[in-house]
Image (tube, rainbow, N blue to C red):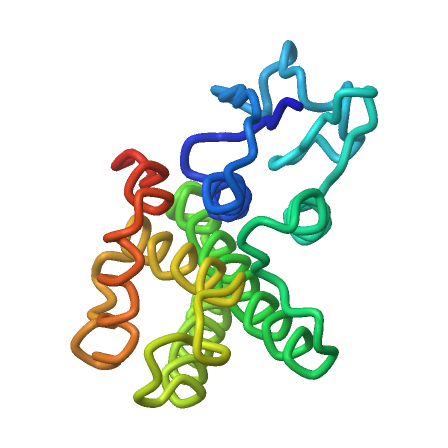
Length: 204
């Protein structure tokens, strides 16, 4: 298998953490620029986005939600998506919330990369509100539990940790650890795992 990623994509990091936790061997190809004419990604994903996973038979899978589901079922080792329907739905809801925070954060980053005279502050404020509401909901739902969705490490923790890491990377001005100390404790637990430590994005 081959996984196409960009170095700072939170969605690609989610898949990479899943691969590491599941002990699945996979070739990683870092794509310097998805916009480059010679980007290899569109040949496997018509949307030209990462992560894209190419299986040994040439079948391509995208996006991260599909890929992590495939990987969790590929081997019974360290199941990270519960089989119980209610618990599974809860874990998937956490994933949706974490991915949504990343979506909003990326929208802010992209808007701020525009020329200053073309930036729309309304877009920035609207997306930042989503980030803030999302973090608050995470903190309230987690409470004083060790993990986000139950009594053990799951995909919910992976997705949450990846979102928190992306906030650190792109929005370091948000002091979320002080505001939500339970999320701070969770993130420190996650960074102690090789799967998270080895996939930290480069400062950019």
